[in-house]
Image (tube, rainbow, N blue to C red):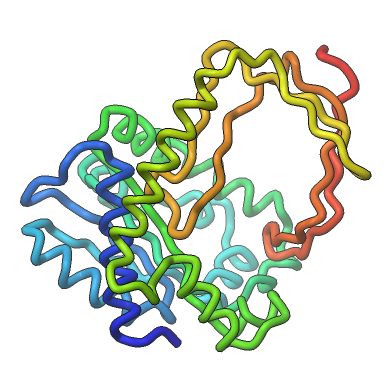
Length: 274
């Protein structure tokens, strides 16, 4: 478990991330949606107070427990799966920021659920995501998220809870006197790196290893992105490839979870540009 001091520092870092991602200063009376899973309750309470101190309006939403989520997908009919609560659309049209505190107690509880049902829910909520995407493009809204250590995350990482917690602390600089200053320095440094990368006259990037032989074309208007405040922690730099000039084989040796299933050894192959 994170100490009270670490949680307080984590909250400050998340508010820095939210402000940095928006690229425009927050104002008093703006609305911040605070979503969290149950093990993240202590951090949610701290953030709730800090948002009030900033003169803004926090709206809190506790996420489904894994038992609730499992029953939702197992028992829900089509109308229930695609149901929008009254006021949901209005809320999304008016929020200025959203913080999600990820603290899962299970990563595999949906492994027996038909992926089509999960996909149906995601598709049904796309109009809500579109609202937020439009607001974000207009710099009226931003989001950030974080991960808190749980026994399930530690177990899946084949680590003890203490070891996993220590990694979160180090990755977020919560063991430093001023973690926000650390993140500001990283952001400044990475901004210069992105400028340099975007200035390169590159037609394509070629990656080759024992399992990978991939040529990626950035395209004329692609820009390198990353370390924008959206994810805490986050260090990767990336761009979206132009599919018309991207081909070869990609292989992922890092396992992950998808719709409750443990996935490893993913291989993607594109043989031509058509």
